[in-house]
Image (cartoon, rainbow, N blue to C red; front, side, top):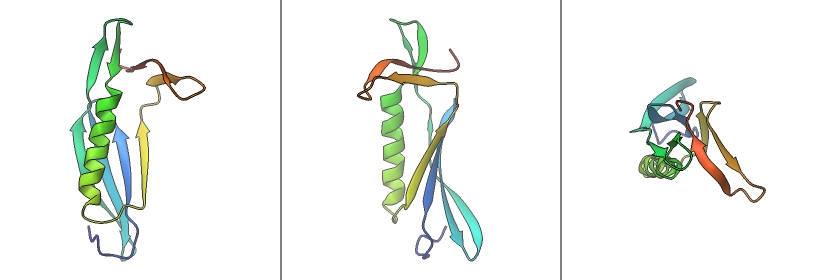
Amino acid sequence: MNRENDSSVCVAVDLGAGSGRLIAGQISDGRLELAEAGRFQTPSLFDAASGYQCWNIDEIEAKVREALARYAASGPVASVGVDSWGVDYLLLDENLRRVGVPVCYRD
């Protein structure tokens, strides 16, 4: 991927059940170029209090931030989008504080 091109670089973060991936995209000469910007194992844990298999959300966030920082060191990133499976959940209160644990759909 030509990071010196005038086209903005956008990064997609895909949080999958087995791994997290960061893919950078850029339009160059009228074509979409994609490059892997990072990859990591999706960390999970067992919450003894609830009995649920949970995502280790703090470690996932740290891994995403680390991969983004490494990639952004080679040039600016215009935007970042994140997606994950739609059946996982983490409940928040009205102040956006966690209520409970981030439950994994694999539970």
